[in-house]
Length: 250
Image (spheres, rainbow, N blue to C red):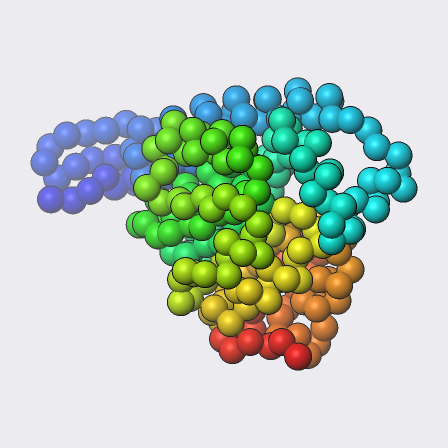
C-alpha cells in the first residue's frame, strides 16, 4: 500500500484525494493544527493584552533588578500574573530548530505560562517523542503551564520542576542534551550553563532570550576558546552551538 503521493494525489487502494488535502496530510504538524494552534492563538492574545498592564519601572530600577543576582526575584514575583512569553516568531524558531536537529532531550529555564514549552514539546512530538525538562520558581505559573500542556495533549513529554533552577537542574538530567532554552532570570544564565554544559552533545543548540542583559554569559559563549559558535539572532536572542562534546569551561 502506498501512502499519499502529493504529486498525483492518489492511493494504491483506489481512493483519490484532492491535492490540497493530500498536502495537508503530508505537512500537518502538531504546532499548526488544533488543539495546539488554537490554544497558542489564545495565549498570544492574552500575553499581548496583559503586557500593556505590566508596571513600568524606572529604567535604573529595572536595570538593577534585571542584572542583580538577587534583585531578579522581586522583579519576577511582581510579574507572576503576566505571561512574559516569547514572541510568535521566536516560538516558531524554537520549533524549527528542535525539528531541524531532531531533538529528543530539551531543557528549558523559565517556563512561565508555558508558551515556549508548548512549541518545544510540539517539536518533540513531531520528532517521534522525547523529554523536556522545564523549570519555574513561581508556583502559580507552574499550575498554568501544566494546564496548558494538558489542553494541548503534550503533558506526557514534559516535566516542569518547581523551584530555584540552580537546584532543580542540578539533578536527574539526561546524559545527553540536544537543545536548551534560557528565558528566566538573566543573571543566572552562566550558572545554568555550568550545570548542563557537560551534558551538551556536539551540535547542541542554546537559545538565550534577552541575553544582552547578561554580558558575562555573552562573553562566555562568544569567546573563541569557549567551545561554542554563537551569534545574535532576531535582535534579542543569542543562538549558540556546542562545538565539542566535552565541557569547555575554564
